[in-house]
Image (cartoon, rainbow, N blue to C red; front, side, top):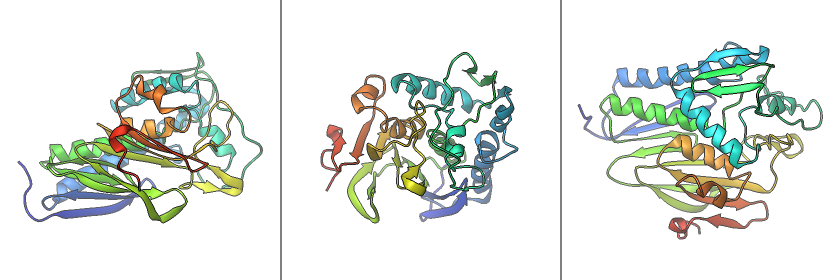
Length: 289
C-alpha cells in the first residue's frame, strides 16, 4: 500500500523536542500510534533523564541488554571514540550532570569540569550487550536522536508511506521524489540563516553549542577527555545517507577536522568555527550565503 492524497503534517512533542512528519497523504491513526510507540520505546531504553530507563541501571554497574538498535549505535560510537582520540564518548553522562545538565535540569555546576571514564576494560559494548564493572552514566544524545529519526522513517515506510520527511528538532530524514530545501540556522541568531541546502533522499543533522547552553558559557558538547565544553566550533551540519551517521558526525566535527572522518565515512558537511570561519565540502560550496 502507498498512501496518496493531499499533503499531511503530523506534529507533536517527544523526548524534549518538536517532531514534524510530512507525508503525501493523510497519516492514519495506526501509523501515528506506531510512530509514537517507537519513540516511547527508544526513550525507555536510552534516556539518562529517566530513572526507569534501561541504561540508567548502569549507574550501579552490571549488564544491560539493548534492543537490536544498540548494535549499530555502539559500533558508530566505538569508531568515533577512536577517530576523536576519546573526545567523543557515550560515557559523558556523569560529566554533563556534574556541570548541571542533569535529570532535573538544574543547570547548576557542582564544580569544575570532570573527564569521562575511559572506554577500556571496565566498560564493554559488544553488539547489544553493555557491561560496566564500575558505575557509569551513559549519554547517547550525540547519535541517538538521529538513530531514532531513522527508526521512525522505517516505521512510516513499513506502514505504506515511502515518501515522507521526519524532522526532530532540525535533525531530519527526507525520502521522496523531490528534494527538500532546508535553511541552515545562524549559530548566533535563530531568526537568520547562513545558507540553504537541498536534502534529497538523505539525512541532515546539526549540532550547535547555542542550543543547550547555560551558566558561564556551558553547553552540551563536551570533550570527554577533559570534561570541558568545546569552544573552538559553534555549529556543524552533516548530510549523509542515514540520520544515525549524520547526527554522530555532526558532533564528531566539534572534536576533529573533517578529513579525519572522511577517511572512514561518506558525507557532506558545513563546519563553523568560533572565529566565524566556515569549512564545507565541495558539493555544498554554493549552499552558504
